[in-house]
Image (cartoon, rainbow, N blue to C red; front, side, top):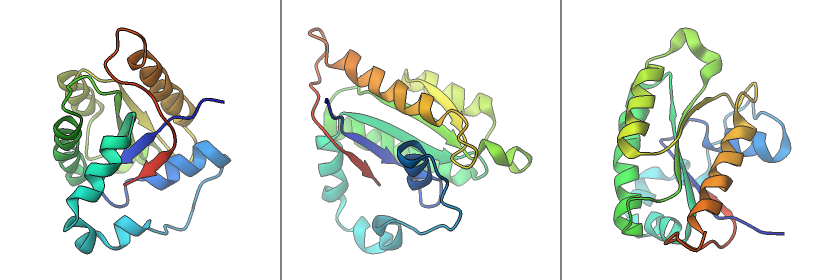
Length: 166
């Protein structure tokens, strides 16, 4: 069975772990338990090379923001820049994701804003909900499709294995 290295990036609390767990186990984590990097964010930020290493070894990238948090949408832009810098290639398999579509009434980032940024980056855009599993399977199917396309003989990137949540 082929394995893929998918790196899930985004600010703390946007739903990176929830999306991944929903996809893998089909369940939603109701109680938020931050992953180590979220929990130790201040210390970890001193070691930017650690994120660089995940990016260097990643094949595909899911950039997640919370559509109920405008700041998380702003935070995603330097993360994409870091991917391009580390990979030294503009056409990296990547998807921009606005999570928490189940909280429509609290929306701070419009669908149009997300779509426009994805068009600027020439990558797919999706809105998801880890809570009600809206577009979660489609998200992971699409990143695999992107990675498979990139690993074709004409693609510059080759594929490997695993998953990291940053």
